[in-house]
Image (tube, rainbow, N blue to C red; front, top):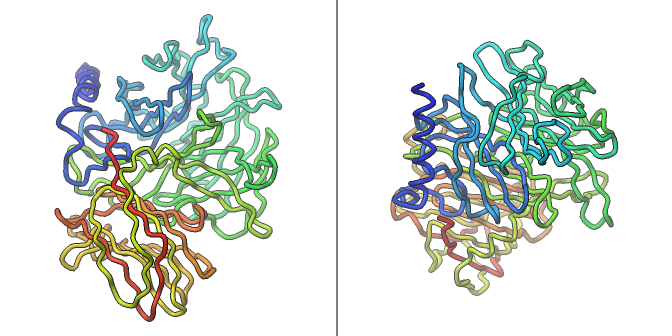
Length: 490
């Protein structure tokens, strides 16, 4: 009774306070999604239905650290401006609501609709000794949810078996579930005609990065840019504090990777991006992903209150053929441009050492082209204060793009301080195009037309809002510098 009453009270509080005194706190992002209060982790149940985007997310109704996992719920018309909805799936009878997906059961194959087309959530029920796959459904467009009385619909009697991701596969008229076998580093595929009765089809893995448990799979067909409609299938997995993807084919039964023994392919080369999943349909018919901006290495310790955890910018997904391989392309959705305030354009610059710009801010977008000197380390410093800054640079001799936050405040957690640098291979073509988003405590960097992406958290001192360009070891050029302060979505 106490849990039910507390969750109801929390749901009311979420709706009542979302547009009042909140969203002005130190470190609070202004155009990334955050819950008004309390802990969040994985995005769940991303589904677009009758003009509305639904975002469910892992949430603790009782506090600002992980626990009592519940599906909280928000809705949007543009993937940027979100309205809190009532709690969708509550922890009950000692069973937490772990991650999963949601679908629009258009033809009412489940029978839940009773004359309408229901939304169906597929989630993992979690106890300390058992994880099972379960259903809940909504017949009012996602406002209220009822758990299926026949749960669980898939039970292997295993402690670790989670994160079902479900989609409709038209060629075989089957629902397909990709679900993680974390310890085995496998993704299992199941098929169903009605979302209730599931038949095992195949397994994929182990492959790629097996250094940590596999979680949060997502399997989707992505368009290949410049190929006149060709698609390839992409499988996402998450490994403790990082992600990987595989490119291949899916025939309704099994996923076959083009290169299962090849190099590890990463969605994001930064320090804080995890559990990303996608909307398979959007208003523009794009496939758009959202990830959790945090790291299990220090997630409970980040110095934010009364909330903890954020979602990434929504990213439009595609593939690009690079030689004989396919590479993921991620582009921030176009709707972000509507948040731009008046553009500030700076003249091109060519110099050595550092130059402080006449630009400041804690919530902005910036882009420029870097032409690095042959042996230089060059780039930009954000959140600049008295000897403090986050450095985004390109090492021309190593041909890597790097992000280094070691000069930013980190005393709140030793692991955060230790994990201060990330690198991504980026061939030196003579020019590096960078698009950078800083949003209070989140930085997202898109380079090389979205084929290299880096995300990280940073917690500057108050007033650390300066911006510097730098070039060490020689002269570098900076061209096409544009800067926009960004409006708030709250």
